[in-house]
Length: 194
Image (cartoon, rainbow, N blue to C red):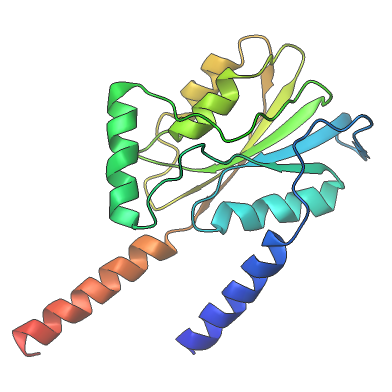
């Protein structure tokens, strides 16, 4: 059953990963019905959980889609990434983006990201800082590993002094952490002879 779930998740992530990602500088961005204007869905995702949600929102609203990609990728190893993100957070650093995303042509931006260290990831802060939010509406969608939203709402409000922050979507998506815990527990039991 676990192998079947992994295969299904991989297939879903593969399908969503193949969706077109734009730099969000379209001359005529689409208008999404019922959302009050031109809509852009922007996301940062490490494991694919946030990417799945971004794809669902993008298709439902018939919006543009853009991925935040760090100029220097985070390590593949989960624990190394956690440590780097912690160091960046504690030092108050952002992480530059590989390419600029421009929200100027859009009225509403759906912004998705995983919670890192109970706050907004450094590369997402770089995105937020690079925009003029005057007259814009930001709708966050966030995933977390069980620790909730941390200080993310305060961080988002800090960047939106001239824009509007609307209530967003929050979902616990801790598969990676749960997997690590389960494997660690299993190995511990094997070493103890249970």
